[in-house]
Image 1 (cartoon, rainbow, N blue to C red):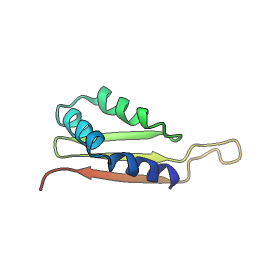
Image 2: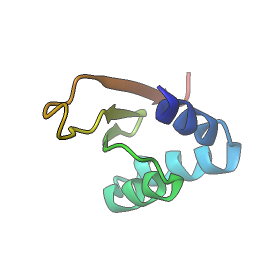
Image 3: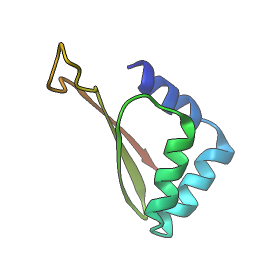
Length: 81
């Protein structure tokens, strides 16, 4: 949840959100992934996007004590009306 909060805080920045929207609408997956990577999250993030929005899936990392990921948090960002 902490990592999700970090993502939401960054998406709350109008300049960052505008960049994200622009590159996602243009279908530039590498640039979307680079923007997400620039946030510095410590969990894996899978991005799926269309011209109308982006879905970010944050998953817990497997560890030696817990070899399987237990949880996934999905954050949807939609622009327009």
